[in-house]
Length: 100
Picture 1 (spheres, helix red, strand yellow):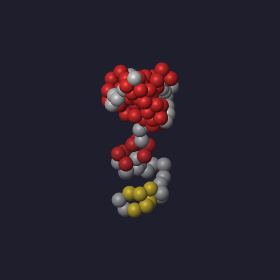
Picture 2 (cartoon, rainbow, N blue to C red; picture 1 turned 60 degrees about the vertical axis):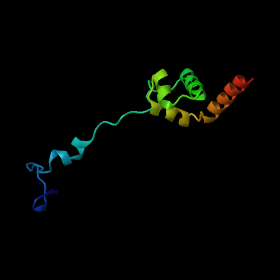
Picture 3 (spheres, one colour; picture 1 turned 180 degrees about the horizontal axis):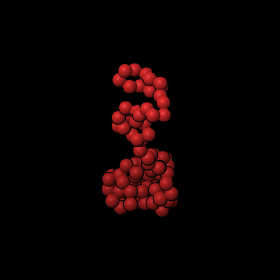
Picture 4 (tube, rainbow, N blue to C red; picture 1 turned 30 degrees about the horizontal axis):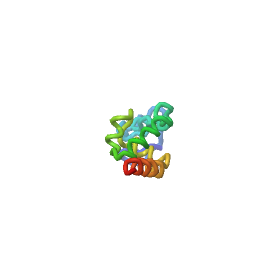
C-alpha cells in the first residue's frame, strides 16, 4: 500500500510514488561525519603543549592558535582526557617557581 491524495491504495509495479523527493528518507539522509578519525586524535606531545598553555593562563581560543586545532577541540580534549588536575598541578609549580 502507498499513500496518495485519496488515501491508502494498493501498490503495483506500475504505480509511481507521489511523495515529493524532499520527504523521501533515502534522498534526505546525508553521510554522517566520522569522529575519532586517526588524523584527529590527540598525541601526547600535543596534550603536553595544551596543558602547558592552559597552565600559563591562555584561553582555549589562544591555545588553538598554537596547536593545529580549534578552540572547541582544545576544550573537549581537556574534558575527555581529564587534564584539569594536570593543568592545576602545572600551574601550581609555575606559581611556586615565580614566587621563590
